[in-house]
Image (tube, rainbow, N blue to C red):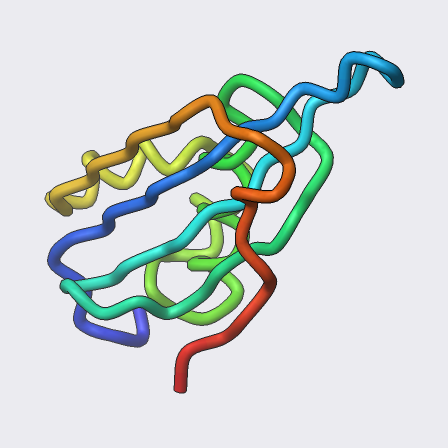
Length: 101
């Protein structure tokens, strides 16, 4: 890891498009209590947000690159505190993409 990371929290919202039959999500990613990224509306369902979170964190050096293709739950192997939560929501409740500076 290039950055000292102790905890990861991911809050996701999922919306199912009944007319198209697809699921979408958005997620806010927090590292050590600071929001570092909001995904915006992305295609995926179930735990896709966890895999995308791991890829984002590995690309930015918060977790080793080898973990970027795995679920964020595997970050517990590194001794990190990992918390995730997902809510069913409406399309209008999904977040816009943003990178915290």
